[in-house]
Image (cartoon, rainbow over all chains, first blue to last red):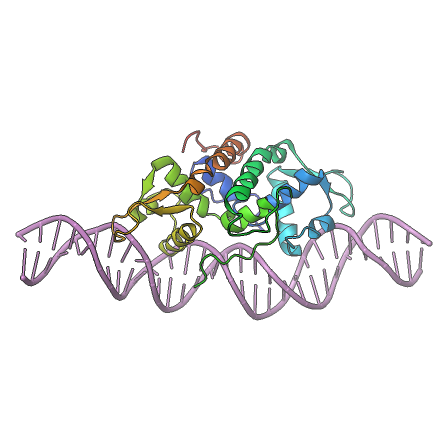
Length: 118
Length: 118
DNA sequence: AGTATTAACTTGCATTTCACAAGTTAGCCT
DNA sequence: AGGCTAACTTGTGAAATGCAAGTTAATACT
């Protein structure tokens, strides 16, 4: 079980950001927290992208260990203890907005169903 | 060999962007083209992140099929025929800048070697 | 003109990550 | 106290990735 051990590929900030968040799920979790404020484990599972439970648990652990998210009640039990963004996680909003804007503009031809708000 | 077939997980633009670019390598290729203008296959291999040849070839094919990059000489042979960004690929610059800025600000404590410019 | 060199790949295989289904644990409710 | 269910964990097969080696064809060299 390796928690916050990352093999940083280089000193480049972009590549380092991707070392952390460059996968299909981490930023989906951040997006859900940006749009909903807080989310419990089972609420994450309700998102249309259908993350699987083991991946969700691992990503929540990882994002917590990297201080992007935290429990709403830090000392409470897990049950119904939602997650929320830390300042660090919340600071990803511009990145997600930029990506969303790009997708709307350049992905419509490949994916006509794409919508304007998530 | 499936080219531009994607299983879009939802109609959300953020998730759709990640369907395409949510991996460790695609945006590294875009970054190299943003910072260098054009790059040949072997120049991509020289980047410090050390992409492997099969992944590079597949991503170049994918990014080409999605019209984010193109050959500098569209009808020329492959040898020394560099790649460049299309308008679509170039439009990812704000996304990468946002991610790079975030990383510089919030990843330094975990990755002290991180630099300001790539 | 013929040969050597090398850029741009492809192929095969081991390793890691991921997806899917099922099982487990522990708060909470009545 | 017994059942329900949120929050996970575990197991297994499939897919993606990493690594080393091999192939092809355009250019360079003599």
